[in-house]
Length: 427
Image (tube, rainbow, N blue to C red):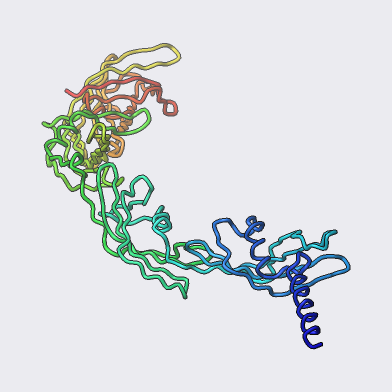
């Protein structure tokens, strides 16, 4: 009898076990993990391996035929561990089987990521793009095209604190120069490593490429200077002054600077220019530019001239004066004798005219900033016999340095004075 009861009990246990393993059983953690691995890749990327899950809560409605589980998913890729949360829903079909119906992300609890390793070489290289360092008084920007190599010197990773401190040696290659130095990068982890700060670790030192080594001399710059003209003045009084080595003295090469990662060299220099009656102090810059096809080329020379003296006293000028009035035009022969310059810029002169033959006193000034000259009637010395102001000559113009002439400003009219053209040449 006891043996029979034992046999019946054994059969019941086998049947119960079979029922527990049937498709109608509530899905357990193992089944949920398997199906998450197959169907949740829109939430958990395929690059992440699901290590395990924990069922936080289960809810089943047998009458409606659904079961829902809230689960925590532990996954990782090669560098980062992830904790996420999902709602997994099953429905029971006509065969009394639980079929996966839906997987949704659950954001009611925080999703967490934490590093498994420090910042990668790719992350470190990307982190230096756009940084700037000082190289020989120039700012070099770390653009992709000039970074030749990035080498990790040291890396101290604190996974528990989500911190990584990296020192890298960087080699840069620009068109004219190469440079090498070290920078220190601090990374913080927040769903991935990102640079939080940086500073120089060792200074960056540059040197010119062998084909870009360049030095010039004062003699060469002087020669290049004499091949150009020096702009002076503006508007109608603008002129381009020619330069020759015989007119230049006190030539001084002040120094040079570089920019544009060494591809631009600027030489500062100064000289005195004695151009006839006008003496200039000139500060100048010669700018050279390097490119790999043509080497170093002189790009531009810029001038900053200042008039320091105009030696007009005792000079004699001759020329013509054309007067246009309502009654017609007339031409006179003029002789201008500048007697003195009582102070800087001031002029006193005698102006002789014929026909009619007369002379007048003229006073005025020369503007050292523009070389503009103004000489106004200041009384007759020998009267023309008519006191009409048509015979009074007021001169407005500028000193043409190249040609040693006094050139009137075209089309000028001052009040009731005549409109005229005048050209006086220094004798």
